[in-house]
Image (cartoon, rainbow, N blue to C red; front, side, top):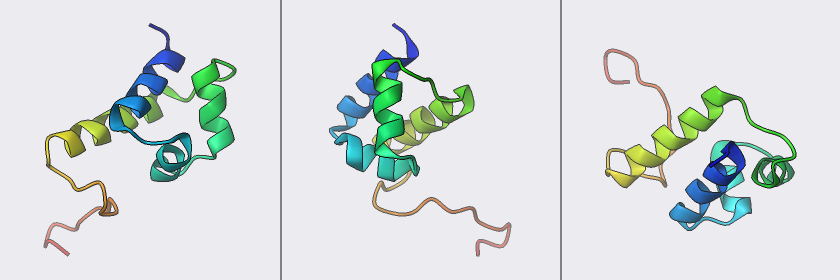
Length: 76
């Protein structure tokens, strides 16, 4: 399975449209379409980040409705 198929499978597994999936990760819809069609490919770190975030959401460790933000050591 190549990267374009993996990205498409990840998006479909979440039940998100191309528009919602691209908004979630801050990428243009056209870019996502090109990735899914195999016209271009995302950087490997971005694919890993998307898969990791989706895994955390699936396991209930983060809420997909909450923005992801870093926290300081003091919890703020």
